[in-house]
Each structure stands twice: as C-alpha cells, then as structure tokens.
Length: 281
Image (spheres, rainbow, N blue to C red):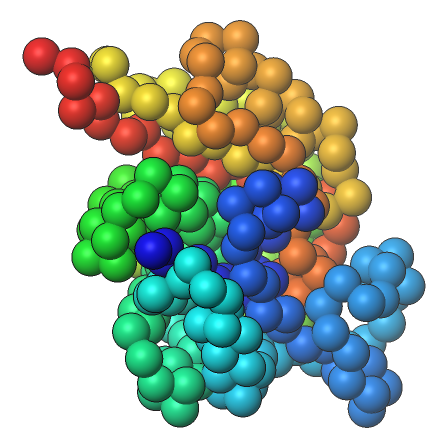
C-alpha cells in the first residue's frame, strides 16, 4: 500500500514532476474584476497591468474532494497534504478542515514556506512515499526538509509591492532612484528583507553566494530556480549551482500566478536544501 501526496498550486511544481510523482494539486484562486478563476487558467501576461485582481486559497471542499479522490485509488492507504505557510494564506486551515471532513488517515503539514521551497518539501515527501515509507516516515522526511529548506528571491523593482501595500511608497521610490534590487528570504512562515543589492546582476550573484556558504559536506542537494517572466535569470542561477555541485533534484519553473500578482514580473529566486547522506560515515 502507498501514501499519496497532495499540495496546493503555490508549490509551483512543473507538470512533469507532478505527473512523475503522482502529486495531487489543489489550485489557488484569482478574482479578476469580480470573476473567480483558478490559478493557471489565465495567462500571467494578461494580469500584470490590472489593478482589480485579488487572490485567495482553495476551499475546504476542494481539499475534501481531492483527498476523497485519492483515497479511492486501490493502492492508497494514507494521504499527506503539504500546504503553503499557514501565516501566508488561509490554505492550510482549509486543508485541515477538508481533511477532517474527508475522514481517514490524512496528515496535513504546514511547510512554513512557499513556491520552490514548498515544492522541494513536496518532492521530498513524494520521494519518501515512492520509496515505500509509511505515513509516519513520509511526514518525518517532509518535516526534516522543512527545517532545512531555504528560499531567497529578488525583485527588480518594488512597484508591485508598493501597489499591493506590502512596502511603503517611499521605499519603492528610493529603490527606483538608487537602482536597488531588493532581496528577501522566505523562512519561518514569512518574507524577511535582506540587504539589497545594486542591480539585478549583483542580486543574483549574492543569491548564489548564500547558497555556496550553506554547503554541507557529503549532503545531497535539492534545488529549484523560480522566476516570473525571467527564465534566463533563473537558468543563470541553476547553471551557477550546477557548475559547482551535482544536485539530486534540480528544476527551473515559473512562480505561481498568485504570487506574481503581488510581486510583479522579474521576480527570480533560488530554493534549496541539503539532505544529509545516511550512508556517509
């Protein structure tokens, strides 16, 4: 018997990885001019210049339906749900309520992060499930990844964050005037500002530098480069990492539309964690 993995679309996992690991994905929602649409149903390009877009998480009923659907599979005897940070979205609470309504052996885990870092936690859980671990074992692997995963991202301007009220206007004006590229680390359930860089190129170099300093001898690397309409910059990050290490997991993907609505285009980030090698003496 097997453990099935479910997450929300904030994890920003590429379709091929979702299919390969049989991961269930419950979509986030956008409201555009009063009309609700699922994340992924509307091209990002059509939303960036609009001011009438709001976002929300899935409903408990959607999680309940996803859980019940996976439970009907003959080889599934337990479910592990890994959600975006509870501090960033109502999604985790919805998953808890949906799991309670669905009944059965379901674990709901708050990944305390989002995007590529959340995706790496989900993949860790899926790999453990694929290796035949029990629900207890899958949960333990996921929580270990949560404790170790990091996500650092930069935005070329603060314009969208100012518009959304997440930074004061004066900060956006100063960033534009000084050519500053803000850096953030997503950890402990929220985004924490880091020392900004002078320009996007310097910011990307600093992200790689943070990754380099985190290296753990003998550990296996899992890494994801994420972007919002900036695939070349994300690939630059991934290439820099792969020039110095051989990741066990490595992919590049777009941030989810829900996140990009708030940050704007040009967002680029690197998520990673070092998995200790149990066979290393």
